[in-house]
Length: 158
Image (tube, rainbow, N blue to C red):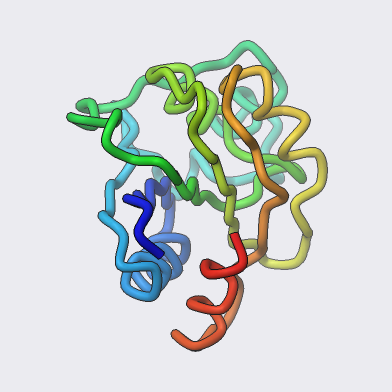
């Protein structure tokens, strides 16, 4: 594939980061970490606590957690894989922050996610308004031990 690709990911605990590294290697893509201005603590991620930071953010669809830094030369990428852990059956709102930080018109956005048990849920419905003009493809769960061969085959089908 000759298209210039980027794998951008947010990882709160390291699981999504591992999937992103494997995907970037398989796709021969650049890698970019979406880092929150305020890192998430274990307490922040406690989904059982309705007052935890992640619960509060996910209960507010307008929530847009801040991001550290900005990807330079985003224009060079035709395909952008966006990775994240599934929170409450959708992407964390920091992914909306990332998508709204750039103009993805004419680009292909490919979500991928990790989860302890749920699927992609309503992820694309929640992300679509944040990347107008982009082609938002159906996402894929990258849980467990995916081989480079499996990942390459997925990328080549895009």
